Image (cartoon, rainbow, N blue to C red; front, side, top):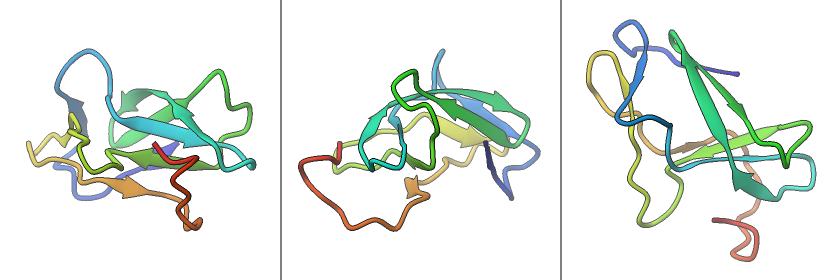
Length: 91
């Protein structure tokens, strides 16, 4: 679960699913993830990651995110990890 501040009261998405969201476990391998919005929180999961410890959103050179605050400002690309970037594992 990720919590956001300064969203204008919550989160919104443009479309049926949050796009460009990835999750990784201790192995540091990122997999496409699903997400649900609950107010100003984002619940993120993947069937390929039993114990998620890192999330990345719109983290790529050509990524176009679809997550917004209810103030209609876009959520910028982010990552919750500080792992060294590795082109073989990063999407």
